[in-house]
Structure formats: C-alpha cells, structure tokens
Length: 350
Image (tube, rainbow, N blue to C red):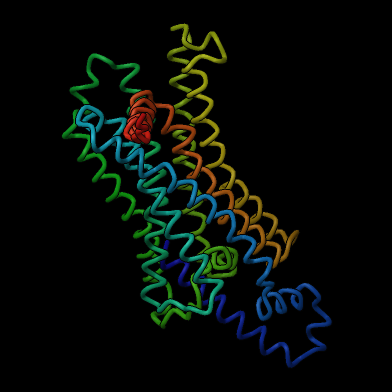
C-alpha cells in the first residue's frame, strides 16, 4: 500500500507539473472550468482551510494519549490481567491505534509545513500507517473471535487460547499486518516504473484522491485494498450478529440498559465508524468515475475521510470499549483514590 501511495504521488507530481504548464495557456483553462479550478487548487492550495483539518487528528491524538497509556499500564502491571487473552488483544489494539494516530498526525503536520521528508522517509511513514491500520483492524477481528470462543465454548476456551498461544496470535497479527500492505507494494513495484518517487510531502488524502487517475495496476490495487477492508469489517459484523443470536435465549438482552446490551452497542458504534470511511471512499470513487464530481471535490472528501472518519474511532475505542472492562476501570479508580489519599493535609499546631 505504501508503494501504491508513492506511485499515486508520482502521478500527482506529474499533474502538478502539467497544471503549472497550463498556467501559460489561459484560453485552454477558460475552456475547462473544472480543470482550471483544480489547477488553481493544486498550485495555490487553500492552506487556511487545510490547516483546519489538522484539528480533528490532533484532538483525537490528545484524547487517546490521555487514557491509553493508563489502560496499558493497568494491563501490563497486573499479572492476572495481562495473562488473559482479551486484555492482551485490547492492549494490542490500543497500541496500534495510538501509533496510527501519532504517525498520521505527524504526516499531516509535515504535509502542511515547509519541512519535506525524503523519499525513503515518506515511503516508510506511509508503510507504517498502513501496517498500524491493518493491525488495529485485524486485532478487532481477533477480539470478536476471542469473545465468541469465551461465550460459546467456555469449557474449552482456556485450552484453545492460553496465555502462550495468545502472544503467538498477536505476533501473527503483526506479521499479517505487514504482509497485506506488502502484497500491494510488491504488485506495484513490479508494474510501475523504477524511477524516484517525487513526493514533496506525505499528504495521504491528496495521494488517495489521485489514485484513481493511475494506470490499471494502481486501480486494481485500490479495488483490492477496499475489498479486503470491506470483507474484514463484514466478518467482524457477522461475528457480532452470530454472538447476538447464539446468546439471545440466555436472557442477557432482556433490558436495553443491561451491561451486555450497552457493551454490544459500544462495539457497534466503533464498527459503524470503521464502516463510514470505507463507504465514503466507495461512494466518492463511484461519483468520480461517473463524472458526477471532480478531482477537487474528491480531495475534500479524502480530507474528511482521512482526518475525521478514520481517526475518530481510534480515539473513541479506549473510552467506549477499554473502560468498559470492570478490572481496568476498577484499577484506574483505585489508582486515582490512592493518589488522592497520599496527599498529606497540612498539620495545624495548637
């Protein structure tokens, strides 16, 4: 995926050079108003409006930093907690999301500043973004599988997913997170030219918006990536629905305010926010292919998708799901009370 973004950036660079040459031909631009507006947007981007899109990822990063380190501390500082598979998977998901938010915020800041990354630095940054995103998504799927086994196979759960096997599962998830973007990287490395990647900045939304203007190999990788994400999210949704129907007769869903119902709702809210950017990208691509919207509108849609819709669920996960675990919330409350109790009141002498 990193190479696909890099190849998209090459096309973007060629388009920018082309549009800058079009500035010398006013008559051609006047005959193509949409091309003229895109030309002006790329050559003279609205930096003030673009900087406004820095606010959502920065807020999401700060919200994640406020609680994720404390949850990770509780998980890895308690032996009985960190030896449970569900907490290890939760910690892995939080680490992946925090790394993604940090890397994406850095890339957004770099893309709107005068500081430019080198080709290797940009490619590495984009690859890490793809890897951490896939890591969080695959961990969410593993968490559904873990819940399924714990609820429907309680007697065999310990033997199926012991602590030692859970660590191997997390390692396997990270390997898969690197393999999936690497497949796209390999396909584009074979089909694209071996020239240097002319990335002036690592603006992921702009690169994503210009991907559909690439050759057939890039379009194929684009469709392949979207399809893989859709299949993964659909499997997660199916897992939650199977859990609901399998436990429907147990009585835990009788009240909409029961703990099971609220937890179920929280996970579906996160899943909805994961589906939203994917659906937005698909709709934007269909509208662009059918010439309903232009490239400039596609760039704005990509800005909303990358800066808002993708970062929001990663900031909400620790609050909606992480703090729902009794052991974690009680440990955090105990730490807060312990810190308050250590504050010594001033002594008064009579």
